[in-house]
Length: 489
Image 1 (cartoon, helix red, strand yellow):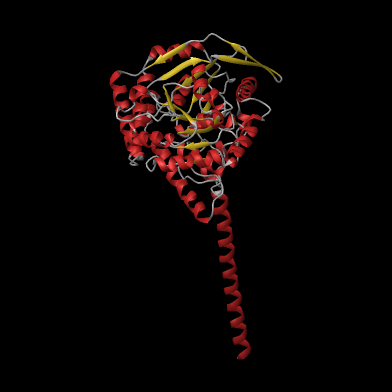
Image 2 (cartoon, one colour):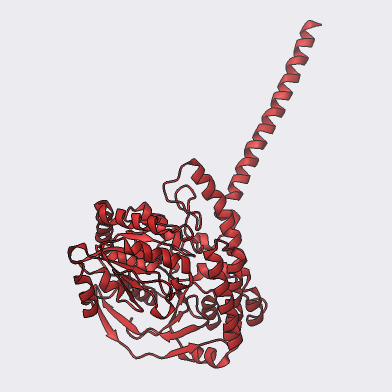
């Protein structure tokens, strides 16, 4: 990739977008990859304060509804509407857009959670690749998805479906398609405002326009399914060489000897201290373990009326990957975020998942199906149940064996995720795009793609043939009747 400039558009569930050039460039010569540090410019953008307040208000409401199991698609749409408002504001910033246009990038890399990134790439008129940060199915970008064994997002099904599972999955497809259409329609006013009539993009078409799709998953985690040549697994892309854990962590771990320790992290988006009842139940459950517990949880938000269990160490920050690589770790209690699961798989650590929202329940379905962890519903979480689940996963060596087997699959790729990503980007830059990696189906009208014209033709042919045969039989029948009458006379 030496000599090429790449624009990176990033923004995940935050009221702002980071615009930058690629910070690290991996240059390739055959299979010899080198990592070079490159200087790069960062443009941090935040919307006006009133936009941020509105976004934060809806985000806070959304999380409360999640905990009370009243999470609705309408609440999610309100969050997406805020993204649409922010996108419109960003596209009006001529200073930023002109600056990007003048940089003359060869390629744009977009993070696909926010549809605005696709519109920015289209506005700049540049080819782009997309990174899917979550599990498959969160959006449709043209992959073949047979309903008989590819679960639809939010169906909570595995690839092993019985008859009623296939019925549910088939019907879920139509619900998913309708909801995705509603989400994309939120950006219609933004598109209408910033793109001239006659050249207004359709978001569903923009997803198909991506030269490459890099998916933050791995064969060790996801169900096997059909992939297109321009779809590349890069799960574990953020993995770094492990380092020794800080001494204060080592001192704590040493207190529990051969019993080892449990690592607990509920991610960076959700503040678990806002779920007071859940927090108390978790603390009580951890107190029943003979292992030590390192829990990423803000001290300042801890309820004053709850005493931290004696075997628990609360910390505001953890070197998560380094702790997962520690030989004394016995279990990872997680919210089920994609990156956390990838890190646990990397180091062969079994899991207990407490999914909160989004793709997390789907992720934990896969973890359970692969037998390297179990899941507990957030609203139904009780200290006794959690303690039993944790002890089960720690004591039953089959979970550890399955996690180690997944780690072997994850580590045994001939190329690292970074090498795959950079190698494929280098390929399309050298070949002038990825048209040779995309099926012609992307250009076909839907009735041709699903062979409806062929089915209608064959149906018409069959019905026409049956009609003609019926007519011929009628003629023959009348002729026979007429001949019989003549013979009788």
